[in-house]
Picture (cartoon, rainbow, N blue to C red):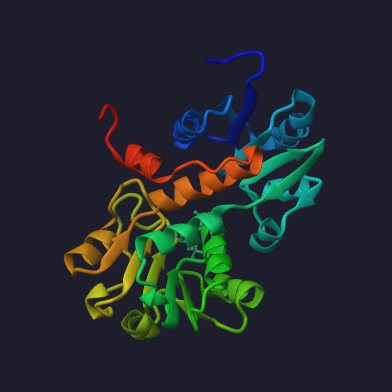
Length: 282
Ligand code: ATR
């Protein structure tokens, strides 16, 4: 029920039709009893600045940003929170008395879900292997440097991107490698944690050269992809008996962190992970 007092939240994306965020935030509002509504706004890149600057005029509490706006928005806001500055991308915009603050809850969501999915924390004292070096990877690295992981190998198709990412985000612990490098096998053998941040798996692709049969038996494999629910990488991990998780928990936990920034309420995440993980209609 929308009343005159209902506060507006939303997401800017292009396209935005497939976003799970409206359903997730409707659940957060229901479970916390907040009088908020969360609206998908299709905003083109040319209109991003205008749409953002209109938020205070419309008394919108805040918005999430998704593809293709996360990086571009950093130029149009009044202030960036430390996570957004370090990651170089904004996923949450908050209107603080007319000042637009850009924050990023992806790293927080990833770390919270990693701790929930692999609770024995055996991954903390061992090297980690991160596949990819794009936008999503930056949030993952920003999270991993908060942990006692001693070394982080970043394996990317274009190794220069992995090199830049190491220089910027983890110069002491990072090791850039090419995805097709012979070194990949050695990192798979040592890693306590293997994280896929590439888009490989979205359409059923395998990650070339990533043979998990050499992985430690106590390694955890995390794939940021949540649709499909199980990429070939995760299928392989599960068939080998390794702990494996898709990125649905990260999605819900970054959403819950955004919701907390806007409303001050801390919604329960587990029921929403269950809800979004079930086929529609169930
Ligand atoms: P996102 O914001 O989701 O991270 P992105 O910034 O476009 O998206 O990054 C996509 C990642 O998937 C990159 O690491 C990309 O590798 P390159 O940097 O070499 O482009 C990786 N990727 C995409 N398609 C790939 C493929 N066919 N083989 C290997 N890596 C691929």
